[in-house]
Every structure is written in C-alpha cells, then in structure tokens.
Image (cartoon, rainbow, N blue to C red; front, side, top):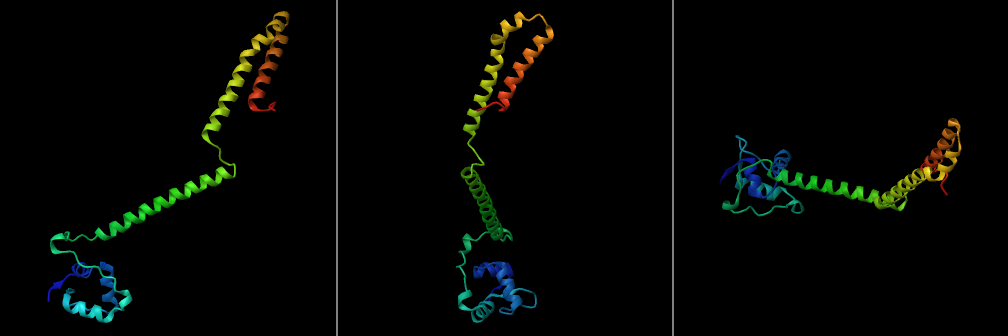
Amino acid sequence: MPVLSLRGYARHRGVSLAAVQKAIRSGRIATNADGMLDSERADAEWNAKTRPGQRHTKPAPPAAAREPERAEAPVAGVFDYSRARAVRENYLARLAKIEFEEKTAKLISRDEVQVAAFTKARTARDNLLNIPDRLAATVAAESDADKVHQILTAEIRKALDELAGANSD
C-alpha cells in the first residue's frame, strides 16, 4: 500500500498529471487527508469508475529507467512538437502562396528579372554612349550654344524615355 504524490501516481499509472487531477475532481479516485494517494486503493477506484474506452494507460517504466520528477517534461515534449508543427505549417502555407502567385503570373522568377534588368540597363548605356557618335557632326556645325544644348537635351531625353519604356515596342 504505497502512498504516492499526484505526480508519482500519474507516473505509476502511465498517465498525465492532469488526468489524475481530473479523476480526483470528478470523484473517480479519492485522496487521503494529506492529499496523497494510496496507490492500491486509487488503482481499484480508477479501474472500477473509468469506462474501458477511456483507459489509455501505458506501462510504467522500470524503476531504474525513471527520470527524476520534473513537471515540464511531458509538457515540453508536446510543446516542442506543437511548435515544430506550427512552423512547418507556416512554411507550407508560404510555399503554397508562392506557387499560387507564380501560376497567376503575379510572381516571376528572379533570373527573368535579372535578365530583363541587365538588358534594359545595357540598352540605356548603349543609347547614352552613342549620343556623341550620332551628334558629333551636327553639334560641330552649330555655332549657337542654345541650339547645341537643345539637341543634346533632346537626345538624352530620348534615351531616358526608352529606358523608362515610353517608346518601347
């Protein structure tokens, strides 16, 4: 007739502390006056007053394999699993969102963006570098500084408009 604490009895039965506390609250098992449990009497009450479908006890580990009493051990395992599951579900949701956006053409690949940006920048560079070659003779023939300024401004604007996509095909 060993007398056990609630935690000790939970380990003895192979159930959680919450299950033992619930059994006490519902009157399925009774505690001694000091709040401890007589394991033999509590086992008999548990077996007599618990429906067979609710008996999910696991065998108690051998005495040598038992760990020191820790309140958070079962809770921490459940918490870690729940947290890992939540993280996994979050990433799966993110991946599903990315796939959806790719299929609805709201998202394009990074490589496509890099190629398009490189091509656009190369075109702008070439257009700007070609201005002196195209306008050298025209500018050399002009003696009016305002006219030279207008010609150069028009050509630079044309190159920038192409970069912005205003004159693109």
